[in-house]
Picture 1 (cartoon, rainbow, N blue to C red):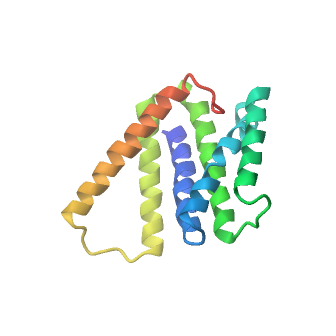
Picture 2 (tube, rainbow, N blue to C red):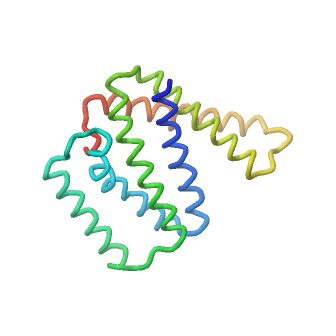
Length: 171
């Protein structure tokens, strides 16, 4: 459960920084910058997994960084929202790396349950600290929350846990 809670903290930070960043940058810039996780994953992976990525993976990361640089205007400035969104990419990379670390030695269902429960708990704390909570939730809102928690979240991360048992984080 501890491993899942750690994964949940990284995932919560992905969601939180993405949400904050979107208040200060465009959705297009945010999506594009978030894609930097593809570059950060092989760069940060050796620090956690103690395995150096192959030369091909590193070359691909360099090419992706160069392509991103070209697509973003070759040297444009980074605004506040963009900088926060870079943190999103870093946290996403760390979440992927730690999934690779924990998934081979843990039960996938337990990891996902602990991860999603941690995200839910931290999200409720953040919501309580920053928003006025409604007196009640409409039933259709609760059904939507349940649907979104199960299908695009739990199932997606469950598949990810199983796949990353056999696939390197940088791939």
